[in-house]
Image (cartoon, rainbow, N blue to C red):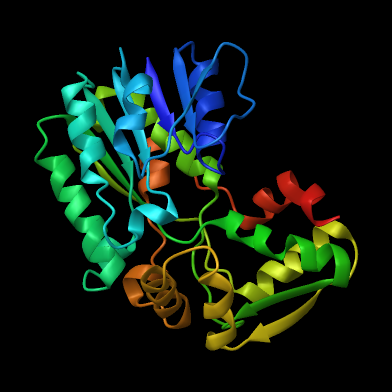
Length: 279
């Protein structure tokens, strides 16, 4: 049995589906009750309270560990979840980490994630670490303004990055959970192209068949919006990256193709699958 945390999110949902379609027994974990695919068990647990995860781990062979925003908060102890998994007899953990662990190792939120990676490597479990850059699904933050005003509002409109489709992350995660060849792997996950926020808005407009105006936010405006959902340290680290990505953050990684045997999906593919959210 494989446990998927964050199972109702942009990565966890397709990962749960992929594992179920592969014939695996799957336990989907989310904070609240949720619909899951047929044959999948659901367990409600709060990862900030690690013991609440214990019922989900009973009999598990593997765990997909996704860091929610509150696990970046001061006082959070995500490494306790790794200890809990080891005590429950889980054999393998696939951790969804962050590209910034390697590219911005001194950022406050990155130091904490690096410590978690180190705890996993020292746990005695089989492990794999996924380090994605920016997610294509972050564009869902624009859905309401596109629907109601025909507008995308974002900072640093001309600064691009090779954002990754969460479906690619999910498929790489499934491979790492199921295939022993990926034990001990650290995979940097990006899309196939550098694309700016203004170009993303244009891709949404093309899929809609109607104009979408781009409005550039100041850093302060963007930070105020982000800190409604994530800790200030994580917002600041993220804005540092998207304001001025360094060469490592602009690199198109070969790792999606290395694991899946195909090139990563472009942003336009993600838009096509999710265009209903913007109508």
